[in-house]
Image (cartoon, rainbow, N blue to C red):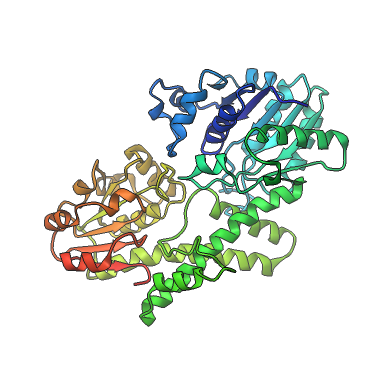
Length: 464
């Protein structure tokens, strides 16, 4: 089967960039990205391509090349489903906040809604591709819905998890380590569906880098990959605390162990903790699956990664308060960076949210600057926690348009996101306009400690 029309349900951080690259590399395939969020679709269609809703280096150029040629963004979900040979499901699968599995299991209500809409609309055979991060055996549930509520057409379900790192998503898509496609290897129809998706990626990915598996292996591989990466972050952060009490330097330790070829240097940078949409959600999902099979020791092992990450965020905030003479009430704290990492405007599970919430509950005034995150998003992130009083604390959170404005008359600066622009700020000028003593907390180990101390800062960093 040769794919001519692709529909992607979900215009978010995965669906938008992935479909843009597919459209760019496969000009003979019509790619339509649909979403019920009219505001988001309008942003993807903005004549000023720099205003698209997802910030990724290089993405706006890709969208500009393909949009209107064979890449389209629409709110007409039914029409796109009807026209498509292949349908990607790329909707949100947040951790459940209610009922069975609350706090661990993935909430699949949006996936089910997609499946029922596809079943209702489709009048021709379709290949349905799981692109969202999903628990093992979701494909089975999808197939049950599609086969039993549809119009008698044939559906093939594939798993095609994404392995994108936000901030490098475009290069990750252009030159992926691997493309993983899971499907029904035991039937001719299943193998044909797998090859149809292989054919899409083969426009720019060598077949040696396209791995085909059964659908369950594909689903579990996604969860496991993120769990392993998150485990490394929590491991180095656990050591950072040990470094602080022993006098070791976490950067020296990271370099030493990273030079071991069996370990490698990636994901060994101590920090306030990992964030983003995947790591915590996927580990909790893995914990829930293990518990559901009675594998409690396995569940406890992986849950400790989350516990360590939460501890690191609380520890950073508590260290800031303790250093400022055990009170930040009425004090102005500048937070530089709100996105969970540099080169993205994604704030999901960002450490900044939790550190700011801690400080607000201590009655600090928190002044935030991030190059790509809006005030609207920052306030929404804090409201989502449900712990910030609208009436009492709204006046304590401020969002400004420059790092210098954030730091003016501040008692302390907390560097929360490793934006390159923060490395080249005029720290002499910033120090001059801060209240003395001036404290700097480098949660991402961005800056030269010796230089800052020469300027006059009292400098504190994770693992220092």
